Image 1: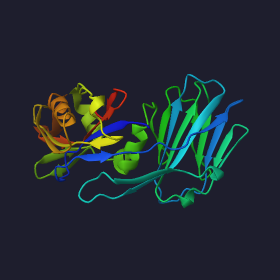
Image 2: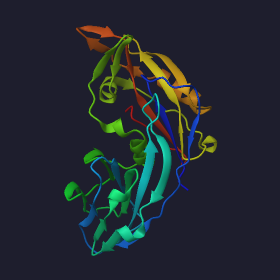
Image 3: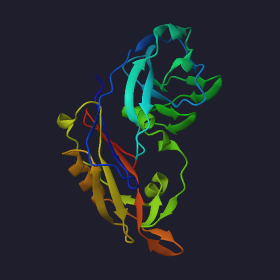
Length: 286
């Protein structure tokens, strides 16, 4: 069982205060021999309307072998906020996967009810070519791994499965966003704008022993004043001790003031913090 906790902080949504516990099961992993590079991975018949994410993980414990997980990740839209509701996660049938001669071909993915999840584990210094429906999505040697979401390389470092699950639960995570949207209470900043204005941020402490299931969310509404201080961090849902850790961490972050027409303005923004069962903490605020 892979245990992961995601704490998601949204500034511009309103949902009732309640804890959400998401248990995502493990799925079958298929091993393969690797005699030479490049390793070619071909995903075929992915529906045009389907979301898909591919993670490449570097496994330093192997030299001439690897493994691949391919799953059907089913979600439904949640009412009133951006996070999707998790429904099921099952392995793609083994008969749809052909592994031979340094090539992995997965066909019939149009049978998937939800999004396509792929995790590829390979030795270091392995060149890999990944294509979806005949179109190359990635080609190269990923020194720290990679994440490809809907055809875009969104990260050159693989930290854990939580990065893949987060994108399937929040499909808009990697969408281009305007730097700021005018609201009645100021300006709502995109993640890129928040990171460009960030001066300092200390990640919160983790409590792996308190993690329930694989994913657990805490939603906060945060506000940044004209001096760049976080003046409000209000929990909209979640449970302790993660609510307190998230609030305290974000409350002490510092930003450069956001300027509109040569004057600083109040602003809000979205932040995602990930607490993992293995003790790691990662964040979109960096």
